[in-house]
Structure formats: C-alpha cells, structure tokens
Image (cartoon, rainbow, N blue to C red):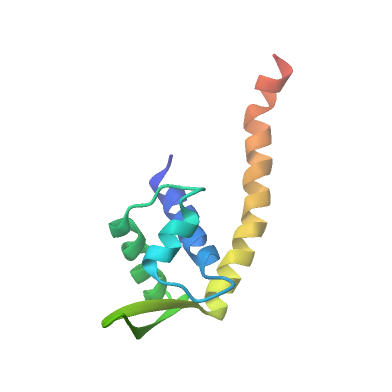
Length: 106
C-alpha cells in the first residue's frame, strides 16, 4: 500500500478512536486491535503528528502513581474525519472503476 495513503488512513483511525471520548494510548490500541494491528511506537508517532497539526490536544492525569496522557479530539480533528468520509466515497468510486474489468470477466 502507498505509504502516504496508509499514513492518512491511520491518522483518521486514531482520530476516530477518540471521537466520542478522551482516551490514552494503551486503550486506543486495544480499541483498534479488532480492526488493525498498530505498534506502540507507530501510535505515538501518529499522536504526536496529530497534536502538531492541532487535530488533538493532550493532558496528563495521575493514575496509579503515574502520569497518563489523555488525548482529546479538536474541531480540526473532527473536520478531518468528515473530510475523510467525503474522500472515501471518491476512493470507492475509483476502486469500482479499476476493478470493473474484473467483474466483467468473472
């Protein structure tokens, strides 16, 4: 898969993981696991990138004697999810065109 496309898809997946409630890294990985396999280092790289792009904010909360970072989606992050939904319709249309011959010859 094209690395830029995959990067964009993973960004949207991480944003979707915190769309309805703030969350922390381990919980996000657990929530996404049925849908995709993501390493811890990849997740934290994505979270940092999304924070830099103002699509999420971070706050630290003490939990069990340690600081836990909670991530909160911003309006920019919500907009990115909505933009993705529109883009995805175009991607599906392109996919249908590319695979049209496969259906014709089946």
